[in-house]
Image (cartoon, rainbow, N blue to C red):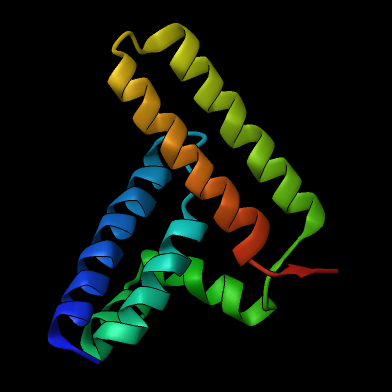
Length: 124
């Protein structure tokens, strides 16, 4: 794997890590999908960063809960996506005035929905 490709994966992983951390504090912004995406990117680019992430006392538990159960239930997926879009909708319609920020929040919500709906496995 080329050096440039590894650096790109680390940068993307760090961006998604930031979004995952924000998701802990911002209702409606998903945490686990972004942390899982970060783990996957770090696993492919930096074993050291991956180990730091999964051994973290706070963030590691999100990833461990997913890996132990091998996915989430359909009901949890639907509930999570619905709550996320409810909060995004409230934010975009009532709280945020700048159109650029509205578009960024909607874009992040779309990424979260795609990850939650298609990347994270559904278990019974």
